[in-house]
Length: 81
Image (cartoon, rainbow, N blue to C red; front, side, top):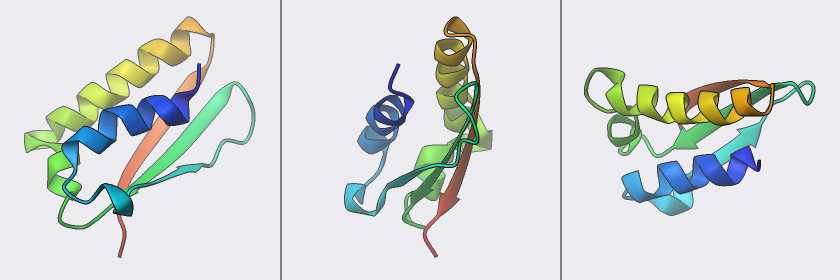
């Protein structure tokens, strides 16, 4: 599974500034995946959601896809400052 594309497909519809979205692969190995998503400061609330509900939903989808392949995944969401 191409997790970077999956993350992009989940994040881009939520943001007002799609050109500011950066997805950085910080993975150390193939079984422990780590991604950092940077969005415009104006979009941070849109991606995280009220009480972190959207961020939690995005992570749940990613965890399900990764566990199906026997991998672990971690996602950080930050703003471009």
